[in-house]
Image 1 (cartoon, rainbow, N blue to C red):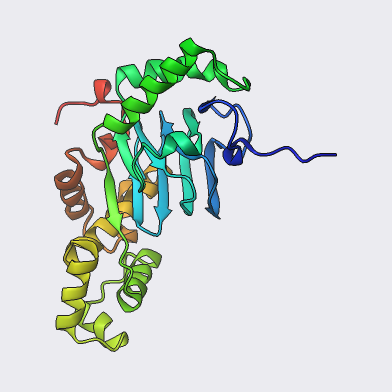
Image 2 (cartoon, rainbow, N blue to C red):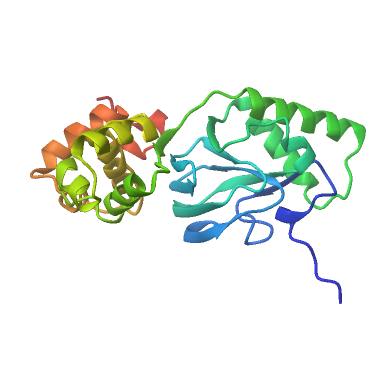
Length: 269
């Protein structure tokens, strides 16, 4: 018996293979709350969700994706993914040759009305070996929409320098641990001045700004699991819930309780 090639690793067939709302191979698009370990695939993958939260990590950093956003993962890019409370969404697998015209690094983009309409149309093509000329033209328009889409990302860049990366990973493992940069630097055999300089050069953020971004990543994941705001604030080491709410609102323009509500029903601030 010849083993069937996963759509994720198929280099032939349609330029676009689409799955919606969990239909299709489980490795291509899972719903609900789950984690996919580090992996890569031959096709590029564009994934969008309509509810919940998607967290993707690559060697370039960490991306958080709320609803109405899509993340692009180029072919061969190793990545880790975690979904929390995702009830619907879609995933487009782009052939390797067509992916060459798309960004060479992971990117989160806005999903406009035209892209949504093209995605819905393309969902009917998933089992076709080839596309007719009309469908190929529509696939080309979809690729143009992906290429020209505006960035819409909450990105946590990961440093590559080993000592700074170990500090960053320790913060991700326990965001509530309120250790100063000077203390982290001493543990890593660095001067505080060198650690400060490396954090900025490696991530583009100061240590304090990077740690706050890391805490926001953790906060969004907990909130997507419907954890109470007070529990989230305590888990992140905030002295009071109001301090956490104020920080969250400055970052996202909405309170934690309103963030995951659809925009058209959010109460006014």
